Image 1 (cartoon, rainbow, N blue to C red):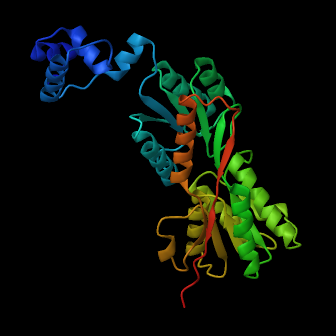
Image 2 (cartoon, rainbow, N blue to C red):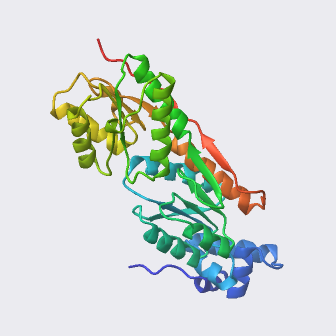
Image 3 (tube, rainbow, N blue to C red):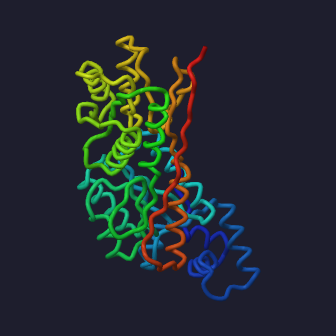
Length: 328
């Protein structure tokens, strides 16, 4: 494997000292214009890239990276969110490092600790645990922003979960349904599930309807969601419509309806699914904007890096109802 050029290689190529090369690259101290040009030309010829991590350790300053901790790297929602973060940070010369918590608070604390050990400039976290991430970032003086779910003591960016769910369920009620089941995430204490369940209840209450516990089910995986949907549809006073509060729930519900041949049950998803419009019938959804979520969180982190010392704030990104009528 070809050896990467070093700072000493550049110094030899430019016929200057390694310290002079360091001054040119870091903009430190006076260097003659002709010498600067010679060094930069040598950098270009050799394809030299500074070791930013080594520099940060040597100087004690922050790295040119931002740590992003997600619960699930395979979820398209979080992939789009990461894309929004990366696009917003690229213009500032910052690189995004991804870490996965797996939805586990202890693992999240490990990943946050690893990022802080390499002196990342800021942290963006979809929280799975308690206040460990905030406490560690606060102790290190590193800006922290929570995404998708709020956390203690730091800036947060969330979707309008409750309002979006209320609007989606109201659409089902407006279509004539009076028994709308709720198929949500687990654990039940999860912020997004609690907010979307509250929106479901508020929509039913506004229509003068009760929200019986028999119409509520939860699941973590697609397979669990399929079984939960089938159980709801087989229960007493079975729903004529289902509100699936995330992509796994919606996918499981689709499988349950398809495999059981139930075309008489309406389904609406919180989060738009890929290929939703080509399904038969097409799937209506409450669509989030994960790219904007990520970009907004990155903007908040940049503001903190630029010296914003105002109290922590929460920004809410609106959702939109996407209605796809059945084909004639």
